[in-house]
Image 1: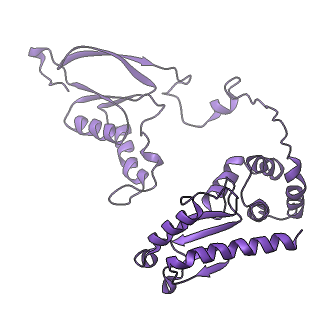
Image 2 (image 1 turned 90 degrees about the horizontal axis):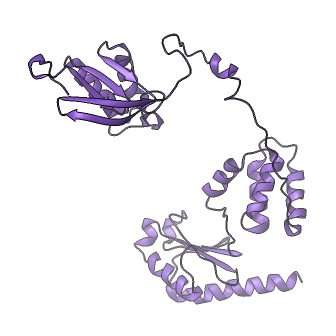
Image 3 (image 1 turned 120 degrees about the horizontal axis):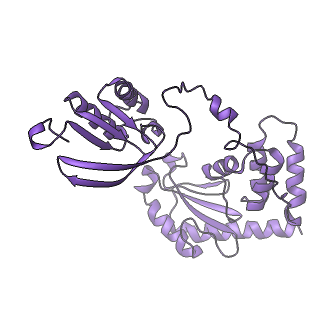
Length: 303
C-alpha cells in the first residue's frame, strides 16, 4: 500500500494478488480509502473457489449471495482495475515504492468489446474441434457373461433401469466386479463415474468380494452402551478378521453398522435376514456354528 505523498516518492496505489473473496474485500477496502487498486488473478475471472460452496459458515448463506455484491462493486468501482489471466513474475524496489512485473496470458478477445455472448467459442476453428476416440469394446469373462447379459436383456425396455440392474448383479455375485461395471456402462450408456457413485454410496453394495453372510453388529448409541463393542470384538476373535474384512473361506464378512432400528432389543447383531437381539457374548460361537451348518445343508441340497 502506498501513501499519496509526492515528497517521499510514494504514489497512491496498491496491488492485491488473488481475486478470491479475501482479495475482493481487500481491494474494496483499499479503494474506499481512496487508493488506486490493481487486483491480479491468474484465472480468467475473479471470484476464486468460493462459488463452488453451497453454504457458508456461520450464516448458511449461499456463496453467491456473499460474492455477488462484491463482484458488482468491484466492476463499478473507478479505483479498482482488474488484471486477470496474469501471474506475478517479479517484484523490485522496497516497501512504499516498488515495481511488479506481470506475465499476462492472451485472452484472444477484445475485453472492451466483449458482451459475453459466447459466439467466439462456438465459431473457434481450432480450440473446439471435436475429436472422437474409439474405445475398445468391453467383453465379459465367461463366468459373468450369461448372467449379466440376461439381467441387461430383462431391463432393456425399462425406464431408469440402472438401480434394478445393479441390485440383481449384486445379488448374483455379492459384489461388483470392475469389468462388469464397465460392461454395464457400455450397454446402458450410463457413464462409468455415475455408476460408480451409486455403487459406492449404498452400504449394501461393494466393489470388492464379500462373504456369503454379512454379520452386522449394531454400534448405535443404545447398542453401544449395552456392550455391542464387546460383541464386535468377540466376533472378530472367533472369525479371525477385523471389522470390514472377510474370512478366508468367503463365508462371513464382519461389519460395524450405526443403527439397525431395533433399539428395544439392544445389543443387536444380524446375519443375513436373521436378527439376534439382546445378544450375549457366550452365544456368539453357537450363532457362527449355526450359520456354517445352514450353509453346508444348502450346499448339499444344491449338489
